[in-house]
Image (cartoon, rainbow, N blue to C red; front, top):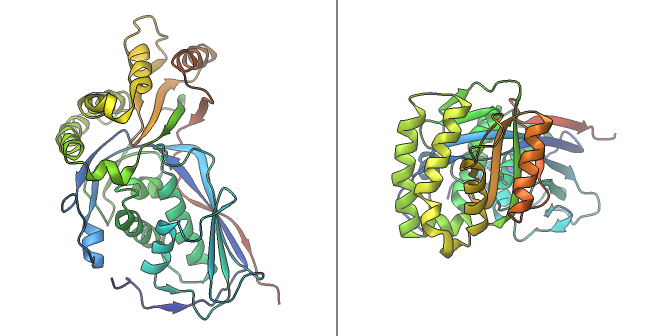
Length: 343
Protein backbone atom coordinates (compact mmCIF):
# COMPACT_ATOMS: atom_id res chain seq x y z
CA UNK A 1 0.00 0.00 0.00
CA UNK A 2 2.11 2.87 -1.30
CA UNK A 3 0.95 6.35 -0.29
CA UNK A 4 0.20 8.89 -3.00
CA UNK A 5 2.96 11.17 -1.72
CA UNK A 6 6.51 10.39 -0.54
CA UNK A 7 6.74 9.94 3.21
CA UNK A 8 7.14 13.30 4.93
CA UNK A 9 8.65 13.89 8.34
CA UNK A 10 6.52 16.22 10.43
CA UNK A 11 7.72 19.79 10.14
CA UNK A 12 4.81 21.98 11.25
CA UNK A 13 4.48 25.55 10.03
CA UNK A 14 1.61 26.24 12.47
CA UNK A 15 0.84 25.31 16.05
CA UNK A 16 -2.85 24.50 15.58
CA UNK A 17 -5.36 24.36 12.71
CA UNK A 18 -9.14 24.07 13.11
CA UNK A 19 -11.36 23.01 10.19
CA UNK A 20 -15.14 22.72 9.87
CA UNK A 21 -16.71 20.24 7.44
CA UNK A 22 -20.50 19.94 7.01
CA UNK A 23 -22.35 16.83 8.02
CA UNK A 24 -24.15 15.29 5.03
CA UNK A 25 -27.02 12.93 4.37
CA UNK A 26 -27.06 10.51 1.44
CA UNK A 27 -30.57 9.97 0.13
CA UNK A 28 -29.72 7.14 -2.27
CA UNK A 29 -26.63 5.51 -3.72
CA UNK A 30 -25.40 2.81 -6.05
CA UNK A 31 -22.34 0.84 -4.95
CA UNK A 32 -19.58 0.80 -7.57
CA UNK A 33 -16.70 -1.34 -6.33
CA UNK A 34 -14.94 -4.61 -7.03
CA UNK A 35 -17.04 -6.93 -4.92
CA UNK A 36 -18.10 -7.44 -1.33
CA UNK A 37 -14.66 -8.41 -0.03
CA UNK A 38 -11.75 -5.99 -0.56
CA UNK A 39 -8.45 -7.46 -1.76
CA UNK A 40 -5.92 -8.13 1.03
CA UNK A 41 -3.71 -5.36 -0.37
CA UNK A 42 -4.78 -2.25 -2.25
CA UNK A 43 -2.87 0.01 -4.46
CA UNK A 44 -3.97 3.60 -4.65
CA UNK A 45 -5.56 3.19 -8.08
CA UNK A 46 -7.97 0.63 -6.60
CA UNK A 47 -9.17 3.08 -3.97
CA UNK A 48 -9.54 5.97 -6.39
CA UNK A 49 -11.85 3.99 -8.68
CA UNK A 50 -14.10 2.59 -5.92
CA UNK A 51 -17.04 4.62 -4.70
CA UNK A 52 -20.70 5.21 -5.40
CA UNK A 53 -23.14 7.13 -7.52
CA UNK A 54 -25.88 9.03 -5.71
CA UNK A 55 -26.08 11.88 -3.28
CA UNK A 56 -27.85 14.23 -0.95
CA UNK A 57 -27.65 17.49 1.02
CA UNK A 58 -24.98 18.99 3.25
CA UNK A 59 -26.24 20.21 6.62
CA UNK A 60 -25.61 23.43 8.52
CA UNK A 61 -24.23 21.36 11.42
CA UNK A 62 -20.46 20.96 10.99
CA UNK A 63 -17.97 18.48 12.33
CA UNK A 64 -14.97 20.32 13.76
CA UNK A 65 -11.48 18.81 13.44
CA UNK A 66 -8.42 20.25 15.16
CA UNK A 67 -4.87 19.14 14.34
CA UNK A 68 -2.19 20.55 16.63
CA UNK A 69 1.32 20.10 17.85
CA UNK A 70 1.02 18.34 21.21
CA UNK A 71 3.66 19.70 23.57
CA UNK A 72 2.63 17.21 26.26
CA UNK A 73 2.82 14.08 24.09
CA UNK A 74 5.68 11.75 23.38
CA UNK A 75 7.63 12.76 20.25
CA UNK A 76 6.78 10.68 17.19
CA UNK A 77 3.20 9.88 18.30
CA UNK A 78 -0.26 10.90 17.16
CA UNK A 79 -3.23 10.91 19.53
CA UNK A 80 -6.81 11.03 18.26
CA UNK A 81 -9.96 11.90 20.19
CA UNK A 82 -13.61 11.94 19.16
CA UNK A 83 -15.99 14.04 21.23
CA UNK A 84 -13.45 14.05 24.03
CA UNK A 85 -12.90 10.26 24.17
CA UNK A 86 -9.56 8.64 23.29
CA UNK A 87 -9.71 6.88 19.91
CA UNK A 88 -5.98 6.79 19.20
CA UNK A 89 -5.99 3.08 18.36
CA UNK A 90 -9.52 2.92 16.94
CA UNK A 91 -9.84 5.89 14.57
CA UNK A 92 -8.56 3.89 11.61
CA UNK A 93 -10.00 6.22 8.98
CA UNK A 94 -8.14 9.23 10.40
CA UNK A 95 -4.92 7.20 10.62
CA UNK A 96 -5.41 6.15 6.99
CA UNK A 97 -5.70 9.81 5.95
CA UNK A 98 -2.22 10.47 7.37
CA UNK A 99 -0.86 7.33 5.73
CA UNK A 100 -2.16 8.14 2.24
CA UNK A 101 -0.93 11.71 2.58
CA UNK A 102 2.51 10.27 3.21
CA UNK A 103 2.81 11.83 6.67
CA UNK A 104 5.36 10.01 8.82
CA UNK A 105 4.64 10.78 12.47
CA UNK A 106 7.74 8.97 13.74
CA UNK A 107 10.70 11.22 14.34
CA UNK A 108 8.68 14.41 14.54
CA UNK A 109 6.87 16.24 17.33
CA UNK A 110 3.79 14.71 18.89
CA UNK A 111 0.54 15.74 17.26
CA UNK A 112 -3.03 15.56 18.49
CA UNK A 113 -6.15 15.27 16.33
CA UNK A 114 -9.50 16.13 17.88
CA UNK A 115 -12.84 15.46 16.18
CA UNK A 116 -16.01 17.06 17.56
CA UNK A 117 -19.17 15.71 15.93
CA UNK A 118 -22.49 17.35 16.91
CA UNK A 119 -24.59 14.67 15.17
CA UNK A 120 -24.58 11.01 16.18
CA UNK A 121 -21.78 9.01 14.61
CA UNK A 122 -22.67 5.95 12.56
CA UNK A 123 -26.25 7.11 12.05
CA UNK A 124 -26.04 8.37 8.46
CA UNK A 125 -24.85 11.94 8.99
CA UNK A 126 -21.48 11.67 7.24
CA UNK A 127 -19.43 11.95 10.43
CA UNK A 128 -16.58 9.75 9.18
CA UNK A 129 -16.33 11.73 5.95
CA UNK A 130 -16.37 14.99 7.89
CA UNK A 131 -13.57 13.78 10.15
CA UNK A 132 -11.49 12.36 7.30
CA UNK A 133 -11.77 15.50 5.18
CA UNK A 134 -11.21 17.75 8.20
CA UNK A 135 -8.06 15.84 9.14
CA UNK A 136 -6.70 16.02 5.60
CA UNK A 137 -7.28 19.76 5.26
CA UNK A 138 -5.97 20.59 8.75
CA UNK A 139 -2.85 18.44 8.31
CA UNK A 140 -2.24 20.04 4.92
CA UNK A 141 -2.29 23.53 6.45
CA UNK A 142 -0.40 22.57 9.62
CA UNK A 143 2.46 21.09 7.61
CA UNK A 144 2.40 23.62 4.78
CA UNK A 145 1.99 20.93 2.12
CA UNK A 146 0.30 23.25 -0.36
CA UNK A 147 -2.34 20.73 -1.50
CA UNK A 148 -5.61 21.83 -3.10
CA UNK A 149 -8.98 21.11 -1.51
CA UNK A 150 -9.64 18.46 -4.15
CA UNK A 151 -6.34 16.74 -3.34
CA UNK A 152 -7.27 16.73 0.36
CA UNK A 153 -10.58 15.17 -0.66
CA UNK A 154 -8.72 12.50 -2.61
CA UNK A 155 -6.87 11.33 0.49
CA UNK A 156 -10.02 11.44 2.63
CA UNK A 157 -11.91 9.39 0.04
CA UNK A 158 -9.15 6.76 -0.07
CA UNK A 159 -9.24 6.47 3.72
CA UNK A 160 -13.04 6.09 3.73
CA UNK A 161 -13.02 3.38 1.07
CA UNK A 162 -10.14 1.47 2.65
CA UNK A 163 -11.94 1.31 6.02
CA UNK A 164 -15.43 0.84 4.55
CA UNK A 165 -16.79 3.83 6.46
CA UNK A 166 -18.10 5.50 3.31
CA UNK A 167 -18.12 5.37 -0.47
CA UNK A 168 -19.15 8.77 -1.76
CA UNK A 169 -19.73 11.21 1.09
CA UNK A 170 -16.46 13.14 0.86
CA UNK A 171 -17.03 14.51 -2.66
CA UNK A 172 -20.38 15.96 -1.63
CA UNK A 173 -18.97 17.44 1.58
CA UNK A 174 -16.18 19.05 -0.44
CA UNK A 175 -18.68 20.74 -2.79
CA UNK A 176 -21.43 21.65 -0.32
CA UNK A 177 -25.11 22.03 -1.24
CA UNK A 178 -27.26 19.16 -2.48
CA UNK A 179 -25.11 17.19 -4.89
CA UNK A 180 -25.27 14.01 -6.94
CA UNK A 181 -22.13 11.97 -7.69
CA UNK A 182 -22.41 10.98 -11.33
CA UNK A 183 -19.40 8.64 -11.26
CA UNK A 184 -17.63 6.72 -8.50
CA UNK A 185 -14.33 7.61 -6.91
CA UNK A 186 -11.92 10.42 -7.69
CA UNK A 187 -11.82 12.89 -9.44
CA UNK A 188 -15.22 13.88 -8.05
CA UNK A 189 -17.84 14.23 -10.79
CA UNK A 190 -20.73 16.11 -9.17
CA UNK A 191 -24.00 17.70 -10.27
CA UNK A 192 -25.48 20.35 -7.96
CA UNK A 193 -29.21 20.67 -7.36
CA UNK A 194 -30.46 24.23 -6.90
CA UNK A 195 -31.82 24.61 -3.35
CA UNK A 196 -34.58 27.25 -2.91
CA UNK A 197 -33.74 29.67 -0.07
CA UNK A 198 -36.66 28.64 2.18
CA UNK A 199 -35.73 24.94 2.09
CA UNK A 200 -34.88 23.40 5.47
CA UNK A 201 -34.30 19.88 6.79
CA UNK A 202 -35.24 18.16 10.05
CA UNK A 203 -33.44 15.07 11.35
CA UNK A 204 -33.66 12.64 14.24
CA UNK A 205 -32.17 9.22 14.88
CA UNK A 206 -32.66 6.07 16.90
CA UNK A 207 -29.12 4.81 16.35
CA UNK A 208 -26.70 3.56 13.76
CA UNK A 209 -26.15 0.81 11.26
CA UNK A 210 -22.74 -0.64 10.44
CA UNK A 211 -21.70 0.70 7.04
CA UNK A 212 -19.10 -2.04 6.66
CA UNK A 213 -21.65 -4.73 7.52
CA UNK A 214 -24.26 -3.33 5.13
CA UNK A 215 -21.79 -3.12 2.26
CA UNK A 216 -20.75 -6.75 2.82
CA UNK A 217 -24.20 -8.39 3.12
CA UNK A 218 -24.93 -9.98 -0.32
CA UNK A 219 -28.75 -9.52 -0.38
CA UNK A 220 -28.47 -5.94 0.87
CA UNK A 221 -25.68 -5.15 -1.62
CA UNK A 222 -27.76 -6.51 -4.48
CA UNK A 223 -30.77 -4.49 -3.36
CA UNK A 224 -28.72 -1.28 -3.09
CA UNK A 225 -27.11 -1.73 -6.50
CA UNK A 226 -30.42 -2.46 -8.27
CA UNK A 227 -32.34 0.36 -6.56
CA UNK A 228 -29.36 2.69 -6.90
CA UNK A 229 -29.26 2.25 -10.67
CA UNK A 230 -32.97 3.05 -10.87
CA UNK A 231 -32.52 6.09 -8.62
CA UNK A 232 -29.71 7.47 -10.79
CA UNK A 233 -31.85 7.05 -13.90
CA UNK A 234 -34.67 8.88 -12.11
CA UNK A 235 -32.70 11.85 -10.76
CA UNK A 236 -31.05 12.49 -14.14
CA UNK A 237 -34.48 13.38 -15.55
CA UNK A 238 -35.07 16.27 -13.15
CA UNK A 239 -32.60 17.95 -10.77
CA UNK A 240 -34.90 19.52 -8.18
CA UNK A 241 -35.15 19.10 -4.40
CA UNK A 242 -38.71 17.76 -4.70
CA UNK A 243 -37.69 15.14 -7.24
CA UNK A 244 -34.57 14.24 -5.26
CA UNK A 245 -36.75 13.47 -2.22
CA UNK A 246 -39.25 11.41 -4.21
CA UNK A 247 -36.35 9.45 -5.70
CA UNK A 248 -34.84 8.90 -2.24
CA UNK A 249 -38.15 7.65 -0.82
CA UNK A 250 -38.53 5.17 -3.69
CA UNK A 251 -34.94 4.00 -3.15
CA UNK A 252 -35.54 3.36 0.56
CA UNK A 253 -38.77 1.50 -0.11
CA UNK A 254 -36.92 -0.70 -2.61
CA UNK A 255 -33.99 -1.45 -0.31
CA UNK A 256 -34.19 -1.09 3.47
CA UNK A 257 -37.94 -1.69 3.85
CA UNK A 258 -37.28 -5.22 2.63
CA UNK A 259 -35.04 -5.78 5.67
CA UNK A 260 -37.12 -4.01 8.36
CA UNK A 261 -37.06 -6.85 10.88
CA UNK A 262 -33.45 -7.88 10.20
CA UNK A 263 -32.18 -4.33 10.73
CA UNK A 264 -34.71 -3.20 13.37
CA UNK A 265 -36.03 -0.39 11.19
CA UNK A 266 -39.64 -0.50 12.36
CA UNK A 267 -39.60 3.03 13.80
CA UNK A 268 -38.09 4.37 10.58
CA UNK A 269 -40.78 2.70 8.48
CA UNK A 270 -43.54 3.98 10.78
CA UNK A 271 -42.35 7.58 10.70
CA UNK A 272 -41.92 7.63 6.93
CA UNK A 273 -45.40 6.14 6.49
CA UNK A 274 -46.90 8.58 8.98
CA UNK A 275 -45.63 11.63 7.10
CA UNK A 276 -45.63 10.44 3.49
CA UNK A 277 -49.06 8.86 3.80
CA UNK A 278 -50.71 11.83 5.50
CA UNK A 279 -52.92 13.67 3.01
CA UNK A 280 -53.52 16.40 5.59
CA UNK A 281 -49.88 17.28 6.26
CA UNK A 282 -48.95 20.92 5.57
CA UNK A 283 -48.13 21.57 1.93
CA UNK A 284 -44.81 22.99 3.10
CA UNK A 285 -43.71 19.51 4.28
CA UNK A 286 -42.31 17.77 1.20
CA UNK A 287 -41.83 14.32 2.73
CA UNK A 288 -39.61 12.03 4.80
CA UNK A 289 -36.92 9.50 3.98
CA UNK A 290 -34.16 7.48 5.64
CA UNK A 291 -30.51 8.46 6.02
CA UNK A 292 -27.96 6.26 4.27
CA UNK A 293 -27.05 4.46 6.48
CA UNK A 294 -28.65 4.76 9.89
CA UNK A 295 -31.86 4.34 11.87
CA UNK A 296 -32.46 7.98 11.09
CA UNK A 297 -35.17 9.93 9.27
CA UNK A 298 -34.89 13.31 7.61
CA UNK A 299 -37.74 15.55 6.51
CA UNK A 300 -37.34 18.24 3.87
CA UNK A 301 -39.70 21.19 4.21
CA UNK A 302 -40.22 24.85 3.43
CA UNK A 303 -39.48 26.77 6.58
CA UNK A 304 -42.50 27.76 8.68
CA UNK A 305 -43.71 27.41 12.26
CA UNK A 306 -46.62 25.28 11.04
CA UNK A 307 -44.29 22.85 9.30
CA UNK A 308 -41.91 22.54 12.25
CA UNK A 309 -44.74 21.97 14.73
CA UNK A 310 -46.14 19.22 12.50
CA UNK A 311 -42.74 17.59 11.98
CA UNK A 312 -41.81 17.63 15.67
CA UNK A 313 -45.12 16.02 16.65
CA UNK A 314 -44.70 13.32 13.97
CA UNK A 315 -41.22 12.45 15.26
CA UNK A 316 -42.34 12.32 18.90
CA UNK A 317 -45.45 10.25 18.09
CA UNK A 318 -43.20 7.65 16.41
CA UNK A 319 -40.73 7.44 19.30
CA UNK A 320 -38.00 9.84 18.14
CA UNK A 321 -36.60 12.66 20.25
CA UNK A 322 -33.87 15.32 19.91
CA UNK A 323 -35.24 16.59 16.61
CA UNK A 324 -32.76 18.90 14.86
CA UNK A 325 -33.99 21.63 12.52
CA UNK A 326 -31.23 22.71 10.14
CA UNK A 327 -30.49 24.45 6.87
CA UNK A 328 -29.06 22.85 3.76
CA UNK A 329 -25.70 24.55 3.50
CA UNK A 330 -24.33 25.42 0.10
CA UNK A 331 -20.77 25.84 1.40
CA UNK A 332 -18.17 23.13 1.87
CA UNK A 333 -15.23 22.94 4.30
CA UNK A 334 -13.68 26.01 5.88
CA UNK A 335 -10.50 26.68 7.84
CA UNK A 336 -11.77 28.28 11.04
CA UNK A 337 -8.51 29.02 12.83
CA UNK A 338 -4.74 28.92 12.37
CA UNK A 339 -2.52 29.45 15.40
CA UNK A 340 1.07 30.34 14.49
CA UNK A 341 4.08 28.71 16.08
CA UNK A 342 5.38 30.88 18.89
CA UNK A 343 9.00 31.81 18.33
